[in-house]
Length: 131
Length: 131
DNA sequence: TCTTAGAAATAGAATGATTCTAATCATTGG
DNA sequence: CCAATGATTAGAATCATTCTATTTCTAAGA
Image 1 (cartoon, rainbow over the protein chains, first blue to last red):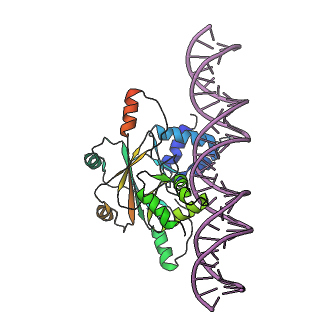
Image 2: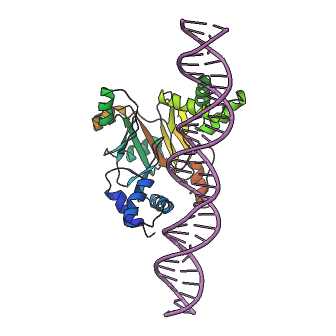
């Protein structure tokens, strides 16, 4: 896993939620010979090892995020993701479900500030960008 | 939207979380001429209208579910989904985030009873079935 | 140092899910 | 009866992701 640490670094330092493609393009700058499949392999390994998170938003490619405990705000209009740190629910959920749980994903749908503004101005439909 | 109500009915009465393909196959029994693209169109419309839910589990095709407020248990081994009714967090989340929120998705990772048993018996890796 | 086994990376084809495009088919209002 | 509009169909196209086969590395022994 020659690229693992580099990929981990890229994801760890990114302020956005990158797709495999974006990770690939970034990595390619320092390692021009790397190939997309390798990035997928590495991302999957890191994910299986629990070192990164994988976030699927309907109708968007999967995104990867550092593994610190936090939740996500998802804009229902442009699909953009924002991190948010909320109280940990693990305890509560274990009590409520009666299961031993391994984790959870909480995605909150809202209208991001940008889309809120856009919608106020003109109720158009567009796909965006800075996820 | 000739098929909308029928599709809504199929999803509403299903005890499982169906993929577009499964909805298609079921619908085809009563409407043999229907086509997969139509099912996708209808599902997307219903989803946009907020009449059904769309659930994406990494590495599995999207699944559709009735729109009653509930959460999901996702087996990290076989990807199966189970419904669970937990207390509504909307209020709490609005308070904590400071945003007006439109909804949320809570997916709890666990090991489903079947996989728990399988793992106890033999720690094999298999993909399963009854989502 | 040379050899080799196993792991990882590469290239590119293949797959699977989903969307798109264009053509056809109702249904409704005029 | 005739557009006009919107839904459906067929099938191609796209996009993300995985797979297969081949090659390259690397590290451990001989």
